[in-house]
Amino acid sequence: MEVRLRDREATRERLLAAARALFAEHGYERVTVRMIAAAAEANIALVGRYFGSKAGLFGEVLAGEPTVRQVLEGDLEGLARRLGEYTAQRMRAEPDSPILRTLERSAGDPEIQALLSERLRTAVVNPLAARLEGDDAMARARMATAVFLGVGSVRRLLGPSDPTPEDVDRLTGLFEACLRARG
Image 1 (cartoon, rainbow, N blue to C red):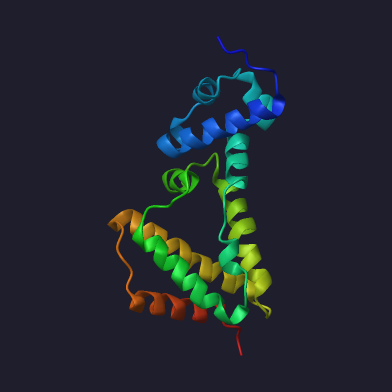
Image 2: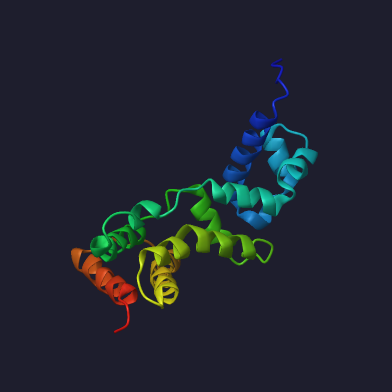
């Protein structure tokens, strides 16, 4: 029998890994704290101690996930094209990230609505608005984000489709219109 040393960080990481896998497989609402603790081979009380709640644990899982930040970096002139290409890739396949699959399954859950809103603001909308000039930068960033998220919704409802070069051009045009300052 393997003896597991008491290591707060190792236990915390096991809980995060178990939660990430379970949320991805079952969605937020179907996963219980007991399931997470069992999968992590940890005491159920440790979820509360380390994360405060299941929602707190979900928030930590979200915080560790990749963002579109790499798309936002680089020259501002090429931003619309990078967003168009990235969004077109989302048309093609299911998200690579298990947590993105979780978000698609669980976005309507009222318990995590505030967490998801905050993550969207900090990972996409605010960084995008910070790149834009003009008084209406936040409004334009929100509009571009709506286009980005809408493609994921369409893929989820209608199934994946291979984007054409014309699709990338159309998406680029949409992002150019969204990102353009007034005047």
